[in-house]
Image 1 (cartoon, rainbow, N blue to C red):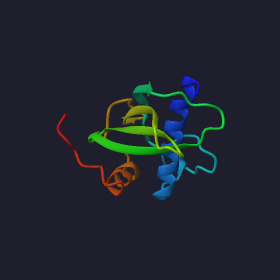
Image 2: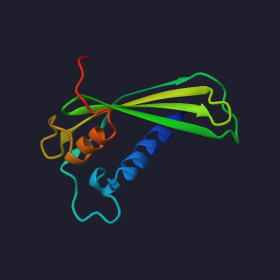
Image 3: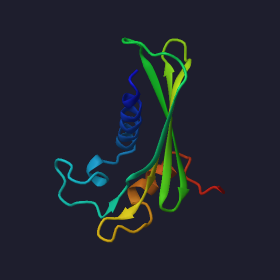
Length: 130
């Protein structure tokens, strides 16, 4: 696995999770095809990290698990775990942290309602002490 693929797969797992919960990408990502209006809140990545634990080879099938966690009313993070499909051996972990900002003012704000709903629906959306 080339290092940049891990972050791409982490992001794709998030997009797939949103879709499974009935949230269209155009509700979150500006400029999406078919978007009638642009979102007023952006969710830039403010931190990311990756751990590569075992080799992954071409043709290996992977399972990706996603653990969203609300950090504050205006931020959340996504932990991704990558396992080999046939052995369920953990081969990598990724983390991406997002912060909500108002697009016009570029100031921090609360998460968009659809992201709040997604965090709550995932069962992991409670505020926790840091």
